[in-house]
Length: 284
Image (cartoon, rainbow, N blue to C red):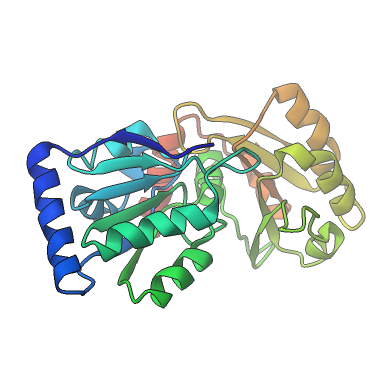
């Protein structure tokens, strides 16, 4: 997928950016910076205040596919470049994304790399941080709400529960070598499992977990968690593959497995956005 330059900044803003870039080049100094920003599950009102401020100050936005249009509107002065990152789909090579960040920042721009969910979870932030630090480019990290938390809030449950588990394991179903995690080993940890990018491998995930866990272990899947398009399924591990198929859920989605998920059968929260806001206000 080629890089798409959606929108140049307004002429006046562009002239200001050009002046900063030219000054940086003439004085051989880095005046720009990069912000790695987690855009949360989708809705702009779930952004942090710090994220909103960073977007308003951005000169250049590098956007993943899963970032909602309403979030882009919070950066009306910025050049928008879509880099098309989505699990299992064609996208801009990571090395080229890092090259864009480095190029614009070294010319004096404030580059905001916008990722769905949290910037530090399954978003290749480690590689981007290494590239930017090697070039001595200042980096700021702004956290966002990950879809695993959004899914739990939507279901009205806690990912941990004193009676069921004392931990959470966040795991992606895809490894760099195209293999899969050791599901049986993960099941043996006794933690709630939040499985990302696993919808194309539901059968093998369920089979691996069932090697250790009971078929009656509570499970759930939430697609587009925390957005108006959200869809979900709740049931048991034994019926996971069939349930997801019958509910016609697809990507992007999070699969949750563990004793704490059983609370979803008792508490049903119809409004996903309200559920997240309620959960966050209680935690505050």
